[in-house]
Amino acid sequence: MAKRVSTKVGGKTDKFTFGLWTLGNIGRDPFGGPVRAALSPAHIARMIGEAGAYGVNFHDNDLLPIDASPKKKRAIIAEFKKALSDYNLVVPMATTNLFSEAVFRDGAFTSSDARVRAYALQKTMQAMDLGAQFGAKIYVFWGGREGAETDAAKDPIDGIRHFREAINFLCQYSIENNYGYRFALEAKPNEPRGHIYLATTGNCLGFIETLDYPEMVGVNPEVAHESMAGLNFVHHVAQALEAGKLFHIDLNDQESGRYDQDYRFGAANIKQAFFLVKLLTDHGYDGPLHFDAHAYRSEDYQGVMDFARGCIATYRILKEKVARWNRDGEIRDILAASHIEDENLAKLCGEFSPASAKTLKAMKFDRHALAAKGLQYERLDQLTLEILLGKR
Ligand code: GCO
Ligand code: MN
Ligand code: MN
Image 1 (cartoon, protein in one colour):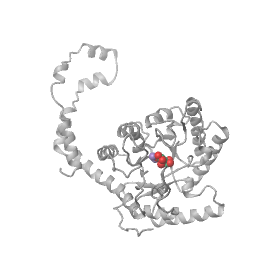
Image 2: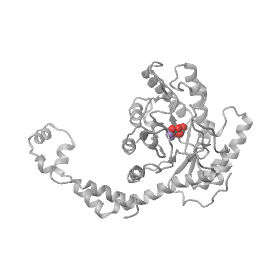
Image 3: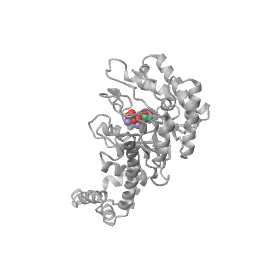
Image 4: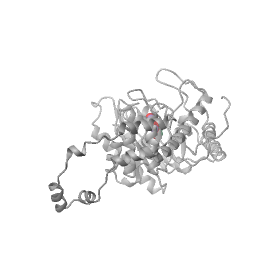
């Protein structure tokens, strides 16, 4: 491995995290094999610590190979724990690999085969035990294989029903064991399946309300996933935040209409990244900021460290830009001019009563006068760009 650069990137005020599978990504793609040698979990954790992160997350099999002997497992865990304590790293989130093994080729919780569904539950309970051993309190469910290429294969209503049964079962398992997990559902429209169920964060939010323990379950939106579908990621995160359901977030970047790129945070759409950081900052999100991304396939491990430091640095720079934007006098004036409130109208429209409806219906509105003045959003957007470009 190339020599590591040892300068830490600042303190640990923001909860920046990486997965073992992110810095440890060996650069395989559908057309080519690995370009980097596989590293041990302890080694990857040390790199994550060197990058200045707060924590490290894992799938069960990132840490423990699926067929490892109990003795081997104990050795890996001991070595990994040592690396965590050397770098003062925590494990805020854990998850299950329900996608790599061939047994999950047609779904895990939503497989049409009851035996596969049962195995997926068993594997997840074991992975929850493992995460709890490291103090994880957030448990992510990314249903990468839960979906279909052809709807001839199964009724999508069964898919939803089976997914619900699994989450209900596992909520109860967490409660029975006093694990204190909060579950975070991660939506994705496609890849690796042609179509994945619960394709967007909005789908997940609707689904959560149908569960037995809706208060235990929130979402883990990922920049790349809504972007793949050409949607506005910031708006999806906003809906989750407003509903009190943003339990975790996966930061990376993605060009719309492309394969699942998982780029370094901010690499593709810096303006969207800015508005995302603004949303999270303005609304006081204080959960983990998890970079679910990997380095370009062109990189060796030196480049992987550049990638990791880049993710953190970009987030921090954007946070400074947010503070600058929020205190900019001209920006504030433009916003004040378009945000017009009125006490009487607030009373009238805030809560329905037959009297307020009657008053409202009798009011005269001059729609032409209301539309007469331009809103200066051209100037506002340009000012935003000038802040981002360092000219303001
Ligand atoms: C992807 C997903 C995954 C999940 C991870 C944790 O597109 O591959 O984002 O990286 O986030 O499996 O659940
Ligand atoms: Mn992803
Ligand atoms: Mn993800």
